Image (tube, rainbow, N blue to C red; front, side, top):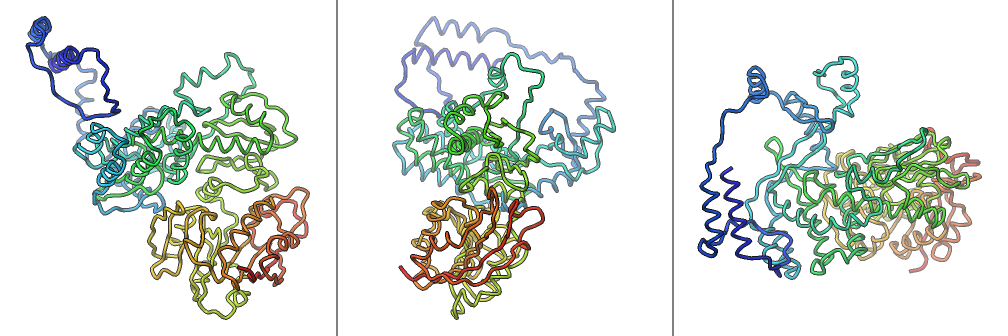
Length: 640
């Protein structure tokens, strides 16, 4: 009480000192000050403050406990028990008591994943990056903002996990069977933890808070933005038919699953789209660089070891909710554009404006569509949809009918990066085989034409064992792949050590093995140019044309591919050929089209035609295919 009175008196003196004049200082943040004006400026104010500070202030200790003494002793005993960990459940407010070694095991399962986290030296370098950023953008922050961002007592962040009891089938079964307010389950195997990084005074937390203040107003401009529960209720009609179904979907581990490049792209998109909401002194490159520091500077401790988060953002950093909203809003925007291309602008606007409501949609020419936006799903022609599978990135839903992708991905010309990331993250990779391509082994002599050590390019390489085979027989291999998980799984599954480095010119990462003869680039294929790596002797093209349905896309791809091959260089290209009433991925590439793509620059030699059904796991081949076959063609580049 006494402290509250003192704070109140200080505020009164500050108001008297500064009056109601508006300050020209436009700092968004600043360090707290304890300064207060001296007495003697206003006798009436001094008299008032003297009076209220002399009021007797008592802190009564005679309060009634709301729990019994036995309960107090039980709580104290639990508090002192070092063999257990007590956490609040992720949802529902339940209290969860776990064996300490079991909890530690669950946390380490996440931290040792290798995809999202890695061990860190513990050396603090983030603040140096923040100061460097401010030095290079002196007009973007005021002195008070710079002081707030750099001058404070830094404390280490700590990692903990909230048990997701609502998603554990073992716990749900135990609740149903035991029917008691206290449920006991022995070390449930399927219990997952929600990762939380607690760092209220970490190196990045103040910068994160600063960015949140700048970027949060943009969220209001995202068409699907919902402020809170009440805001959502305001979008629901007062009355709905009894048959109405409220459908929703959840993004699996959204915060940790957002790739940095996608997040930065989304932030850049919204900043440029709504520049009027961002103070002009905050340049886009400053904001993106600051955001990158926050994303890449998530360092924390657990059980005496320091770790670094490599992917996604930490649940616990101030800007995380705003960042996630911008990313989902960006994916929705891209989805709306796909809907517009597939159907028409009227339908796009209908979805855009009515996404929060479950309503009957207009007929769509016997096509099924699922529009997944803002955590909600609008679905038409549900009898066509046999199975709905969530992709971990949450940007699209994978729908299967006769083993064909329909819905959001229906008739896609080029699958987006988020689609491939989602497939890899969910383990849904039917194109991957656990053996080296037999036709590569059979015809490798034609590929390198006597050059025992060639530089071989493998576009869209995934984690193919073809890479290791080419390396084992003596060649230098460069692969290009969008999905980070695929690249890292290649090295881990083949027990090959590697180092990684960011390559800003391609907005990606280079992964290199110990002797440098395996170099895998995680980036957009079209950003990879001869400025990154010299032209190649050989290319092993393993059917990537099958992911594209339009000739224009195939022409762009083949043109860029040719630019990466030296004159006289050779390419082995595999292409599928089949007939179907309605082709679906993997799309066929006919010989006539192959001639159209390469005849002007290459000599084309037919090497082999074979039955590729052994390459497809059961149930994953092209639907309703007739006369399925694959061709191997040798291309020799004849023109620069």
